[in-house]
View 1 (tube, rainbow, N blue to C red):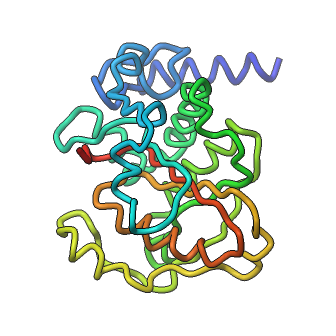
View 2: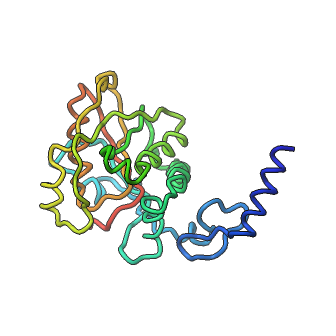
Length: 235
């Protein structure tokens, strides 16, 4: 009975304020939780997980040792699909990110990209930015991955100082902007010898992931792989 009441309330809410797809703007059907089926079918997937030494791997080669890396879809400024990232990060829709990350796990199952991952962690936000935004979008993505894999999500890193936005900075300025920003949290040594998946929302120059992965590499015998929801075209 309680389930039916919730369904009725949900239906009433959809009538009063219809949910819309962030990509095309069309009203979502009852079985479309966040993005419509048509837009999901056309999601510009990178499929990096199917490519040996893919463009994302190449971005980190010689910078920090990683096992493998992938991104779910391509980010292009001005693309309708960019709205997904903006809504997750700035428009208080982190649960859409969690849902989409869990879907990525299912979509990538055949690639075996996630095989052997022991724990999932996220690029952290400094407490000042966390207070301003109210949530860390990368944490929700990491939790979605953990949901899909049925493995733990753990906060292993901390942001030790705030930094200004990376959005309009070039590669060198991005690198300078985040040096010394991230460190291991207390107790991180318990993950020695484990395979850690580091998660962020989007990769452009890769500077943030490099600094975070470098901090994780100080854990003895650790293996690191990288996942981002989106990637700027890196070729």
